Length: 138
Image 1 (spheres, one colour):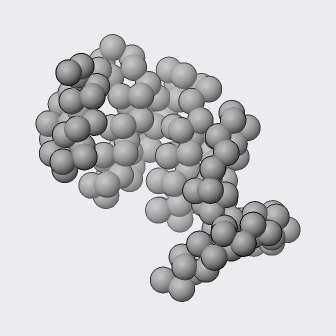
Image 2 (spheres, rainbow, N blue to C red; image 1 turned 180 degrees about the vertical axis):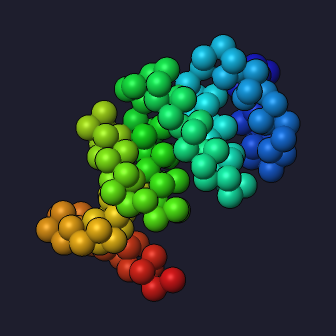
């Protein structure tokens, strides 16, 4: 099994330290996906600053990596940096990422920053609206 797949499996099993070790070896070879996945693990561990740093490294290697922008936007939301999150999430969209999760995260950011018109555009999708309502009730 290749190293990348091993790291993914360790992550799924919650064996983050083993996954981190492999991803760090791969990141040393400038593999942006390794940095992205390191960021995801750090985010799961609540290390948001370190996660954002990893996403930025992934983006520096591959500035056209929409998932890294998306993940960075989600991490920034966790620390209430909504304007920065919007920039990252919109960039992921411009790079071709189109997903339900992206629409939900953007709607939440737009609401948090008072951008009602943009929020309404996203909320016009009833599925997005219903998911956003769940977050707002928490």
